[in-house]
Image (tube, rainbow, N blue to C red; front, side, top):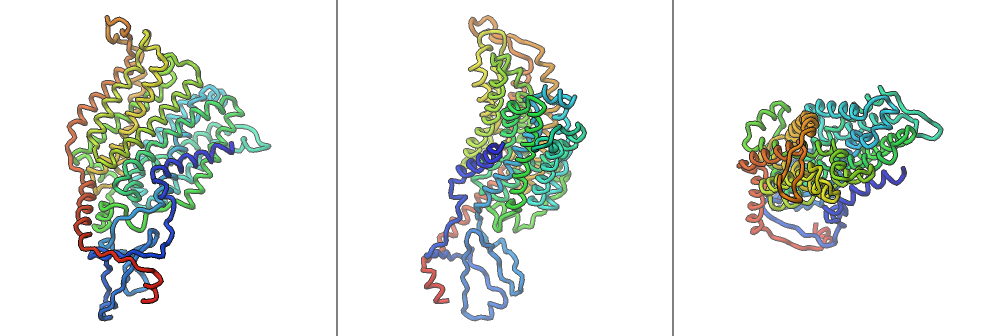
Length: 543
């Protein structure tokens, strides 16, 4: 039990360190040589008091962690965003690590007993699927509230409060039976209440990744950071399969398992309360600076929704997001059946394949998200991923013949599906934010999560019914003729319909245009800059 929680923190920190090129975690030491860049953009205009001091110029330089405050002659200081240039801070990786871990833990709770449904039913007298349904229903209901809560109270307070709520829910689910000298599971009523509390908290971790990326990350980092935070819940599902499948096989094992989740959640919650921040002193991109300068105020959620659906390109990104989350949810819900029909029958092997599928989703999001960060090729990448999704879904429905009974083919197709379908969600979350700029990032993601979860809930029973039908594929072709399940035919059709609709995307990237326009202006103004390297001690003596 002691080794699991630190491994979660280490894994997230390792991913963030790699993406941050390591130096993001290290605060640069103060140098004896100071570089002063003078231009008409970063000179601080004197206030009324300083104007009376003839021929007196005061130069101010700021380190990464200092606030650029503009003197106003009073005891207080106000920030003048028009005199700033975008800047990123090492704290962004801490923010990303905590939000990713909170998302991981929330989905671990959601699917905690999916890998051991028999032990759960024997212990509580209810099916594991029923508790998952309760969680998902609560999640959808709360998603309508996230945007307004974050707008009114700020990201820091919203995330910290949700973390505390999730920790409380986990302890209600676990009780104290796992502690030394204690014994027994909690009543089913307490388990349901705890599950509802975690379900209320989860949307705050699922709907805020685009906001976190916009608030803390540069314009060439946003898709990657969103991919990590948005898809890290898949690691939680993988953890549920691997840890739950091995621990929660008996009543006592279930006690210890729920206790482990409660302890892990408590540790991450304490860290969130101590280290999670609201926003950096200086915005990380020109587009965020522009919103600060204009004093943009986010409207109520329903007002934002109406505006989004009237924005060209938003529904294309929404359709791609819903397609991706629906296909991955359906495949995840029937992973046992999918693997068994392909010849993978051992429970451990099935759990391992399921975990690999979730990890592939995260890996695909990081790799392709990084590519989109550099190129902004949202449309090309999304269309390629949707086409690859249809291709990799196909082998999952092949049955009865040689082509459909190859375990290696089945596992390879499952991993390929994860890599192809996973990136569509974070990439199109960023695309939707880009076309609706300067709209509310949290509202954008809330709409996508609500749509994705609702369509998934409707699609799962339809796919289950369709799986009872078989169709012949490549009929009459020796060695390749095979039956294909109706549920896979349905998923392939959804992927191609979405691909056809998304191919009509033709909308301006408003946020990217704002960033690019500022970069071109900065390059022009740097021609007038003068860079002076001076010794800090000499400068101090002259002052």
